[in-house]
Image (cartoon, rainbow, N blue to C red; front, side, top):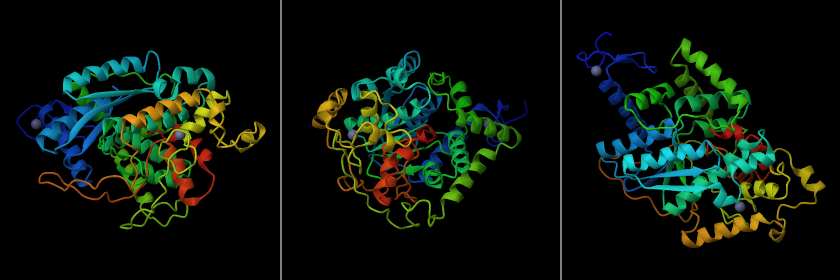
Length: 424
Ligand SMILES: [Zn+2]
Ligand SMILES: [Zn+2]
């Protein structure tokens, strides 16, 4: 190996996938960490004093994210209070093993850990859901439930902000998928690095410009403890094609990943797109949405019943198609109304009881109106308003809420049918 192209003293130990530079390990670590620090400061992701939950799955992305944020928080004195937040979907042989990894990370990084489970929150594990709905739409359930579960865990922890380990490859794939589907509203959401405007807890993606291959290298050279099996219930055929295509492009031209993200940003930038009236023009405040509550579970929702409760009703009635795709006809056939009496809903009642208990022991769901003013900026941390007021990237009740709350149309279920696509 030749000399490192950065320090010119040590021998190069690797070739950076992102830039093609031959560098020594020390220079790779520093470049990798510094680029993430710059993404954080350039995009004003954090404020001093913020309590930040790292969405931790035990996989490589979130493990490296926990490691790097812990390190940068000390190195640059961000003044963040970091915690780990994990969701136990109830997938035997997958999530139980990966959660064991998170338990070890908790000790390794000295960060508190909170685990919320689908079984406790919804009365259904993913193993049970897949038994009922099969492998076709299970990612829709998982995406909607996970988003709400993370928010609930965050409320229980008193957290201001959730960071997730979505990397540049994930985002480029999602950009491709949304372009191929002509979904410009979702394209805007998936390219946003920060989502802070829909009445839900603030979310961000510090690895937006970080290459997956470099995350793997970093974890490998640093000997980080992570779990490396794909979810056993996620066939994700469409994403698979996008991923293969992206990897082929990357092999020919490594900058393809960043180029696609930049294309996504450029497509998303014009805000007069007729396909998404919810996006404010640059510098304009986002339209105030009615951050109401689901009448069944109390979760923030501008619909009367939140997406998770609609899906749960389908499960509990043995009609899992409810809430997936076009359900109007199904509802009519079974004489269902959106506000079906909860007395008839069996496990939904338990679900509600769980949530009410939670609500009693935690503070109320945050809403745009109720959230406290941000703490004042302090030296050393670049603080500012998020530049783009874009909504969430991930499969969520919030997505349906956004479309419906503003447009007034009843297209929540249509949006939800793309749940798997939303899950970055
Ligand atoms: Zn070097
Ligand atoms: Zn609900």
